[in-house]
Length: 209
Image (cartoon, rainbow, N blue to C red):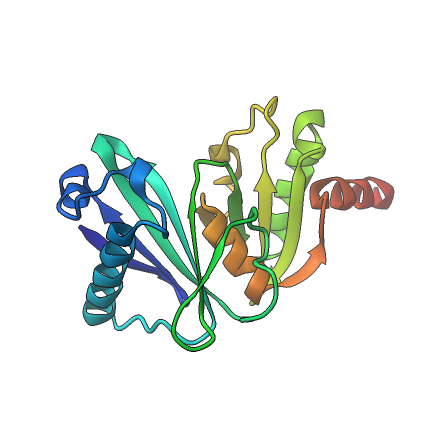
């Protein structure tokens, strides 16, 4: 088992197939309505708190599960700030009330969503220009946020898109590959352009030339 703090408010736990089976579970059985799943999540959250100091604050907690090689899984725990509003950038999932006003959401997914973090405007604009230069990436769903002193781009490839995240590594200081990272960015970042940010920024760059 590997437990790591990806950033404030977001925790990752990686389980091997053998570790998952110790909870009498496999990836396909992960469902919050399953008592074995609830028991496993409670144990994992307690262990993560003890080892890392991560505090599961009152609010909403999104839990996402992704398959891992060898029958294991990756679990992402993301605190969402608003206990009453809809989960940002997340497909509909059943919400489960627990103690207090917290809401738990468990989503099992393999969908593609990328979050790129840029240290400054130059890197961000160069990346957007490259994405806009290709029709299939220019038309993708994308959201651009101010993030501290830099920027984050949430990018969702279309089925016909041959996009490879390594194309952005020249410009991005961090690449996240889960909807949990996108949700955390949407909760805590300041939106600059939503929906089709690549197209909007690319068009603005073209007019400025």
